[in-house]
View: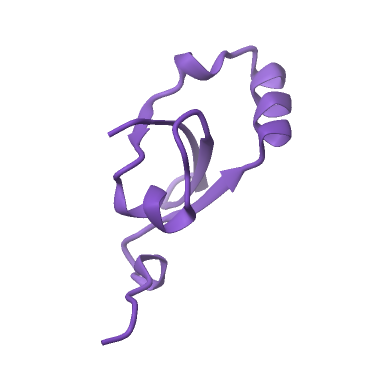
Length: 79
């Protein structure tokens, strides 16, 4: 059986693993520290598929009926 790609499912929003430099620049622009972000577990299927490690920042892009798209940031934590 082949490997299942969860990002091909219509209900799974796009997840983007930010580089350390991209995350640092974005958080500085927003005036945030990483620990002010909501969390996502490293064991989350999307985080695992991205190869995210604790301390990484993930950008989630969702479709929104009112805004067109919605952006969310998550800090990867052990788990």
